[in-house]
Image (cartoon, rainbow, N blue to C red):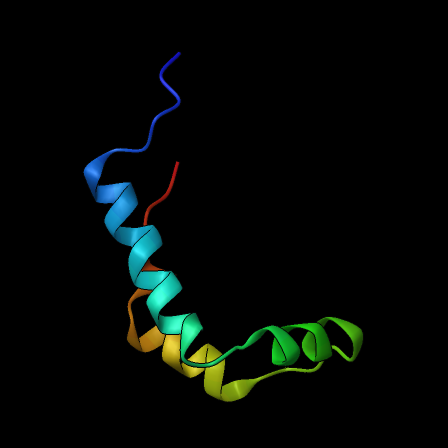
Length: 57
């Protein structure tokens, strides 16, 4: 089995990291885990980035 990421997978990972890095600092991430709530803005941004139309294995 081949477990290394392809260039396309690395680009996807980097894009998601960039999208989330501006939105969640360490404290905001902890707060979201401790008090989960629907973040409509985040879901909108993920949709606009095309993440819901990805075909992942």
